[in-house]
Length: 109
Image 1 (tube, helix red, strand yellow):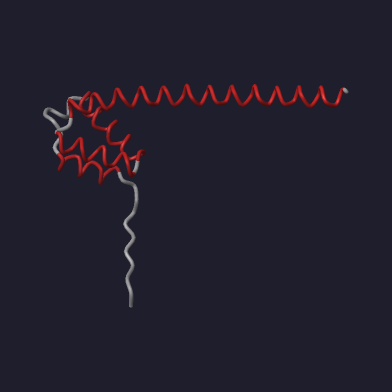
Image 2 (tube, one colour; image 1 turned 90 degrees about the vertical axis):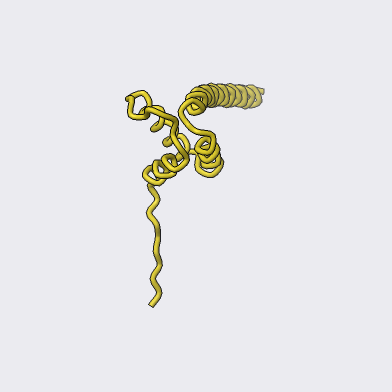
């Protein structure tokens, strides 16, 4: 039954491709998790407790904004532009600057 053998070979090939993709995805996720944990440990040193709490709340809602803010704080610290721990108010203003969303205002006539 050559058709069955071909079908089985195709199944095995597809299964191997799916396993390779899953391994790649897992490796990427692991690297992202490691990088994020490094950033979080740096954040503990750079942010006051209320600012850190706010940033982690942002993480729950908008992970992209969280990562941008965290990376910005780290870069500013590396450049020497941050001399003391970042307060919650400073973090709020940073988040507002980084947030690309335009505020929509509706006027009714």
